Image (tube, rainbow, N blue to C red; front, top):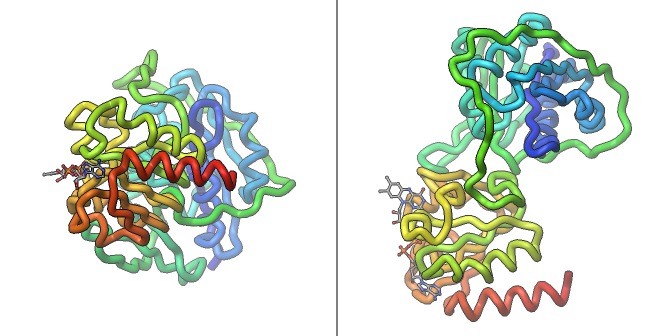
Length: 321
Ligand code: FAD
């Protein structure tokens, strides 16, 4: 049976997040030929509607309200539930982002339905869809099938390819929702980390560990990341040593990432770090210690001093870019 699927589209710093397009592609598969409706929440977001259509949404519903300018669980919960009441969907797809991870359990509990989180692949479509998700910190994958009720999944960024962007037609409508009784009102957001490519969606990550030895030591990593259009990440060792902010931490208690290329420099490869990056598509490890655990998950290992190897890589990449 084909399904009507609602997708939570997310914006960040004045642009749609890539994971929104990936969620639309996932929703197409889940819908089995049904309708995919993207939901955009914010204070001035309707201009993004057509882009969601161009990425495959059949329709877009926007809810605009000053209280939706910044994410709050209460505000987004009320707005999203109003769209659910209007649309009566048979399936929901969110990104497995900070917003998606916070909002999805709340919506699932309101709808009295289950939640299949952190999906990295979908096999089959419609009622036959089987959802693949990592378990045991990425050491194994389980396959889950929805047996009854609303299908509700969150998709891990960078795993499901978006549909090609092309001129498509679809309705963009707005829904007026009275957002009331907020327990939190966010007046201003002060960013600790540097602007740039979002770590959780970056296609290339150059990550440094305690082996980088100082905050200044991250400069060559940043240069390489900039050259490759990627982001800098870090181990907890580097964050604990105050070389970089904790918002860059990758691992079990940091961000989980799956870039196309992960370069780990001066990182030993503790199990808690591997939990956040071992599903990256290609892993390059640079470490002075040939016995370092990181080499066990690396596709390419370079035994050497990162302060020699990283500048050499940067120079070589410059020649071909
Ligand atoms: P180290 O283990 O000190 O490794 C530094 C590496 O740099 C060494 O392998 C060394 O050979 C190499 N090196 C030194 N100099 C150079 C050089 N010039 N060139 C090349 N290589 C060099 N860690 C995380 O990363 N993320 C998490 O989310 C996380 N969560 C945790 C949760 C819990 C509950 C616990 C207990 C721990 C957690 N940890 C986490 C910490 C984790 O166990 C490790 O302590 C941490 O990952 C080590 O960081 P590191 O690899 O940078 O440092």
